[in-house]
Length: 319
Ligand code: CP
Ligand code: NVA
Image (cartoon, rainbow, N blue to C red):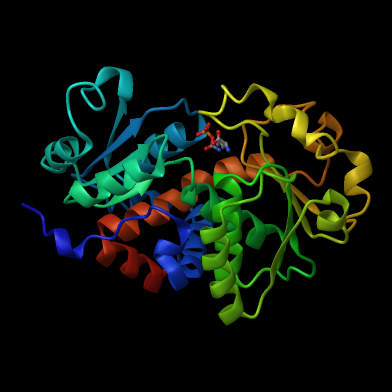
């Protein structure tokens, strides 16, 4: 049986706190390493399970390929195929999977479900997206910003819904000391408790976080312009939600207010013509496919750190 007290879970990006910068630097090193790096197999003999209650392209494929590159065995479990939520509780599922697996990733609807899985599991649990948090996305996003903007002059801006991706983007920026200005329509602001958490972190890092309902105010002179779908998975029943987002599309006119060298970011999948135009998505400023690639490298760092700390540290010292 594994020692429950020694495990670390990643349910929100601030769970790894000040270590975020090093985890990203490690990911950048392995990404830029020669092919020889792939003799490095810190997950050899380990099995990493991933449970999905919602569809996924990037998260699923980047976890499967990342685990494979690190020498581990990925197992993907679609919720439609397993007993979870039908004839078995989250707690019992957590106990059972802990007997086979070395780490579990979980994409769920309510954030409380991944908290419960982590509580019941004897192995590290990684949130692969819940309604409140998307920490793996934030890790890849911070990596993409650092790769493309070594000295971020302006702030990171957000235009859109106050959702899971925004929550961890703001927390990640707070940890790394980046200023953030987010614009959401009235009634679609981010979670107050999470923003208070982020502001407390930002205060000690000397950065600022502010919210507005005015997209132009958010993007003016911004170094990064980020958006996401207006209606997230699980919200499809909120039929009228889209009506509140008039004026929140990231288009050529809106980004003309930003720094000329701004980065356009989107976690994807994008609904082209809704929250963003083709012109912005396909512009030279767009780094959306770098973000998608970096999901794999950032998660390789996180998995190695959570499952084989000694190997993570050895690689850190040698490279
Ligand atoms: N960005 C992201 O999490 O994409 P998927 O839903 O395809 O995993
Ligand atoms: N906010 C979106 C992100 C998808 C990666 C959702 O939760 O559906």
